Image (tube, rainbow, N blue to C red; front, side):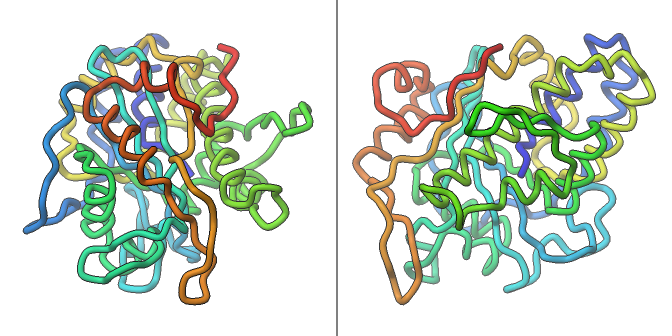
Length: 318
């Protein structure tokens, strides 16, 4: 599971690490673009009044063949072969002072265009990025400006490239994890008290921990280690074809001061779980979700977080 924002932040490190504009330009230019990412002949919500919205996805391809990034050897999408394992809708405000990350439960029972009611993660399986984006946009009425995805292979490789991560566990202890261990950590749900809801917080916890390490690690002073990390990023993450090099560089520059402590992670509001057609599903709280999505559209998520109860990952310490 990984936000494409990781790539933006990692690339920003090049500026502070003194690698210069050449490397800055070089690495943004190597990110793989996904052709025909967005739906056609589908309603498109109005743009948010400020900022940008990103739909970020972790892909369960259940294959040893990479399907994302410049190192991809398999197809990103083939009907019925892959499902979205994690989905996060991210808002970056117009002043670029923060980032707000909302996990969408993969088992959310939603309307999928042309398919009827089903779990949210079925949208990618049935129609790839265009159907997933169309489904999320109709569900939230929030325009998706950009899309990014990483598969399980990329997750393991990127984690190992930074030397593993020190995850803060629920009991307060820190545990070092390599790529395979971290993948098991973010994928666990059967033995968690709150099932998928705890699982999404694990995914968020991992992501924030990785960001903290990449942004503050002494290894950034080592040009060879930094190059290795950035090479792995471009080999493993794919973004939409509209996210041009200049757009990426501008966003990186604008968010150069943002750190993990400026990021808010939360779950979308839910009413609870249930059963539909013999499947265990999550029922979103439509009324509370409307208020949250309106904050996305109004670029007012800071006020929303301050005034509404949310299922939030504990705040970062830095």
